[in-house]
Image 1: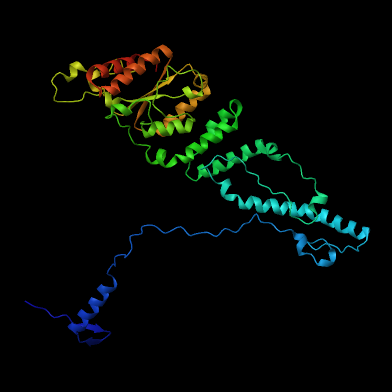
Image 2: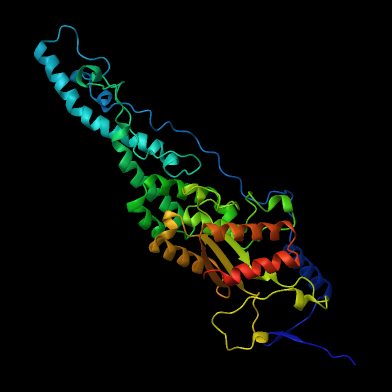
Length: 379
């Protein structure tokens, strides 16, 4: 059964031309066809800049008419002493503005250094001396001693502000940490920590949820093979993130560090083992003593942070609170953290058990020893 469709334009019926309609449809389809790119470039190339030599300053004295006698040509030898004195007086007056403009262009020429964190350069105020200005040697007293030392304190303050600006572009800040350091540690350490944070930001940001590789026994101790979470927390606290023996170090900043133990790695390794429940220990809950232990999962979504309690900064309550705040802010909301503060003897025992657990690929005995130690630790 067939049916006819009649098209009208207003009240006038239109005759259809099937071939013409097919040709028009094909032209529309060709217009909408996506063409593959002939190049493999996936990013826009960075434009090549042109170095303008902004610090190459020329004195405004050269723009005055020659009749003033203050340019490179100067006054004729027949000029009177009074005329020479007048010219020198005008040069001295204009030299103040020359110095301002010369310093401004020097600062503009070093804008790239102000926003750079690839090299440690705390200089934030750049200047240039007016050696090439007409009449400068006769008017200015060029000192041999550099005034850079006079700007050290100001440079540190301004450098911190520039680094804060760069960190703010990634929604990062060191505010709480900087307030604790202000009175106890020089701004130099704060600058170093911020520079280190920015230099390693791609790694500690993209890898914040990355685990450490525990399958290679040669890389589990005294290496940088640590989780992304530890790298990020250490960077925000200004401490190194190597996994190393803390108990054998002296009481210095180099000793600072901590360990993270993921409870999920302490679970029984195989559910097919009929003796797995008997051979593996479990964490004991200190808060739910009246709850049926069979309903508690001691492994999932839990972390243990182990800190040395004999270090100077780690003994300060304000710094401890900063640690708690950073841990709470950096771990996912569904993860429960436990903080253990150990003295040296207990840290030695813990690190022996922890290192053995890592080196033996987490067998039952070493796992049970670590669980027992963490269960008895100070939380």
